[in-house]
Image 1 (cartoon, helix red, strand yellow):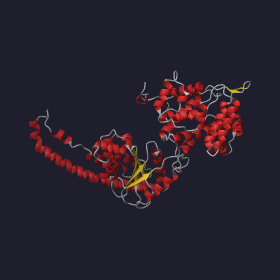
Image 2 (tube, one colour):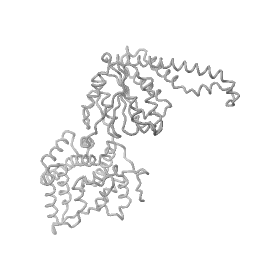
Image 3 (tube, helix red, strand yellow):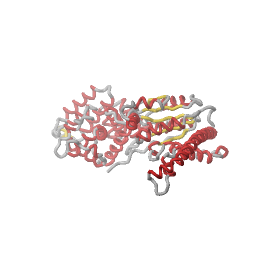
Image 4 (cartoon, one colour):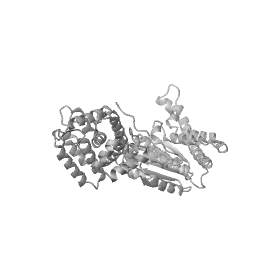
Amino acid sequence: MSLAKASSPEIDPKDPWTDDPLARKKEGEILGNLISTLGDAPFVVSLKGGWGTGKSVFLRRLGHHLQETIKIPVVHVDAWQSDYVDDPLLALASALGDRLKQIEDGKVKRNIGSIVTGLAGSAGKITLPVLSILASTLLPGGGKAVEIAAAMPQLAQNFLDWDHERKSAETEFKDSLIKAKEKLHKALGSPSKSPIVIVVDELDRCRPDFAIKFLERMKHFFIVDGVCFLIATDYENLPNAVNTVYGPGVQGELYLRKFFDFEFNLPAPSADDHAFYLFKDFPGGLDPADAKSMRRTILSSMHSGRYLDLYARNRSSLEQAEYSLLFGRIAGTMKLQLRDMLQAHTLLMAFVRSYPENAVRFPFIDCFVACMRFKDPQHFRSLVTRSGSLALAPNLTAGKESGHTVLGAISRFLTIKDGDSFIGFETEISRLAHDVHQDRIAALSYHSLQQRATYKVDRWRNVLKLDVEKYLSEVLGLTAAFSQLAADEADPEE
């Protein structure tokens, strides 16, 4: 059973940086200010960031910022949604035409139809394949050498006519592009000599030939005064696309430089900030403002007595803050990309909602398993498929990708034995929490371990009553039930 991905955030066009878990307003304003100073100069900016680092949402926020705050028209192009077409120029013309149709001002709206038709018609003529000339020239019953030879004079004339029409179409296309820019400026009340911005997203996900042709079409037909391109790129896929199209002898990064005038590197996001955003909806949890306050509380004044009090009086609110803090730490340590964090969070919440409500959970273990599923899927699968014959506790952190110790509380939990001394355990955990008190999240995880592991004890013998193997089996079993491993994630030793 697969789970749907978490939904994209709602963005207020009038205030696009509000509720931004990645706190990228500063970067958005810097890039917006750069674009606003370009004037009429044609410009191409590469927005660089790794896969799953939030480029798409950043571009949506920046688009609203440019239009609402700086009054610069924006045209959005999702390249991946268009890579089924034969020529990217058609996708670009279509996106520009769709943006023109959004103009609401009645006076400005005049002649929009003719501009849209001009863009589409000229783009169609430019992209008409030369092979169609041959097809239209051959005599009926075609294909024979004698027929082709007989048609050569007509073929030559048709080719000259096509070439002339193509050149005329290129001029018509650029004229229509300039008219489109002027209409968009008027509709938005843009400053004089400001550009329009064509934002291109998901180009690095397109098939290689389409991605490279997209850049080449942009360079040949859109480099006109007052048009700025902002293109999201990554560090691997696009350079690899160059090698796929032109061979390994071509340096992909060097080849791409001829298309871009400026490169803006999007900084790596904060896993902790993103985790807080993901856990804003939690069963029985608090609203965002109170959830922030709870996080501050458990980080600033936490000790075993305080944790016990919150656990007894306000468990769901405590767990909302605790899960978000521990998830952020573990995902950050494992260096999960944002998309993996989204999926891990969805998986984790499915477990939280389906685990018995009154049963004791261990958030640091739950978060580790959910993150490990996406950081180290082979190890996750090996634990799930061999759980009947494999001891889980000594092998949970044995993965090649996820095996490093994220939190000491995880390692200590895995060594608990049913019947361990209650007093000895409490004394040890109190000392460990004190030793790491400057690392507040690590200390929190020890307080959590102390309270939850001692929730049930044999008071007569003063020993712990906790079956670690049983709990791990339940966590892995439920997590696997809501997960679906791809074939290439299978355990290689099976």
